[in-house]
Image 1: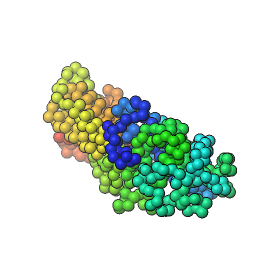
Image 2: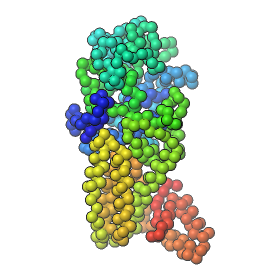
Image 3: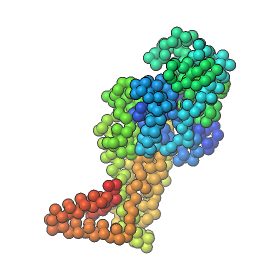
Image 4: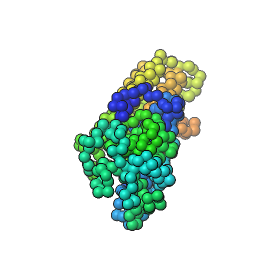
Length: 475
C-alpha cells in the first residue's frame, strides 16, 4: 500500500508504527461559521482514507480537532455582540449536524482547544526551556531560526521567505517569520492564566498539543488541506519536534483545492457555498461521488453540472440495487426452493481491482471506475438470465456493501431495502395489475391516478420492457 507523503515528496510504502493500530490526525474546523463545501472535501476525503484503512483491517484511532478559540471567533463574537463561547457552541453543533448529513463517520475523538490549555502551556514551557521560544511582554513567540528543519514540509527556505499575507507583522518579533505561541489578553477577550500572564494560545500550538496528547509524540498520519502545508503544518512540525526532539508525523497527506471558475474556493474570496446549502440541492452520496471521481491530491472544479452528472451516475447503482431487492423480495419462495442459475462471476477480480486502485495512494477515480464496470457487467448477467441464484445476488450486495458503501459511502443499501408485510406486498401488486389493465384499455386517467396515489404513499413504480417494479421511497 503506497501513500504520497508530502514530507518525502514521493509515494512511500505505508508501514504503521504499531500495526494493526494507526493513529491519524486531521485538522478540523475553526468554529466561527458554517463550513463550506471546500472544507467538506477535506473532511470527506479524510473519511474515505480512514474507511479504507479500516477495510484493510487496521484499527484507526482518528482525531479531528475543533479550534474553539481564535481571532476569527472573537471577531464574529464582537460583530454579533455575543461572547466567543456562544459563537463556538453554535457552530460546533452545526458542524456535527453537517458531518452527519455528509455520511462522515464520527472520529474517535474531537479534542477542543479550550479543553487543552494545560497541555498547550506545558508545550510552550518546553520550547522556552529548549531555547526556541521567547516572551515579550506576555506574548510568546517561536524563534524559527532555532529550528534547523524549518521548511522541510513545504520546501521553503528561511532565507528566501518574506513576510506574506498570512504572517502577522509585529515589531516584538525577532524575525517576521516567528509566530505566536501565546497571545497576551486584550480587554474583554477570552483568556486563561499562564506563566506569562493572562492570554490565549496561538492557532498552531493548539494542534501540536492536542495531537501529541491523544496520539503520542510520534504518530502515523496527519492530513489536511493543501492550504495548511504552510504555515500551519510547517509550524506544527517545528513546535512538536522542537519540544520533544522526536519525529512528529510519519506520513503527511494533503487534499487539493476545490475551485470555482479556476479559483480556490475560500471564505476570504467570498466565492463559496456552505455544505448545508449544497445538501439542500444534492444528496450526500452525489457529493461524495463527485469528490471520489477526482484524486484527492488534485484540484477539483465545482459546479452544478458536475453534481447533476454525479446524481445521474448514482442512478446506475440504485437501479441495480432496486433490481436485486425486488427479485429477492418478490420471489422469495422460488429462490429458497430452487437453486437458480449461479453464473460464473469472479467477484474476487473486482475486489482485487478495487483494492489495487485504493492501494495506489487512495486512487478513488480508478476505484469508482471499477465499481461502474461491476454494475455494467452485473446488469448484463441479469439481462441474459431468467432466474439467478440467491448466492449470486448476495455476492453482488456484499461487494457493493463493502466497497461502494463501506469505503466510498456513495450508496446506502440499508436505506434501499424493500420492507413490508406479505399482505402489503400483495395489495401493491394488485394495484400494479389494475393499473396495467387500465393502461391496456387506454384508461390513462386511472393508471396515472394509481401511480400518483402510490407515490404519495411512498411507493414508486418503474415501468420497463420486462414489466412494472416498485420500491419504497421516503414520503
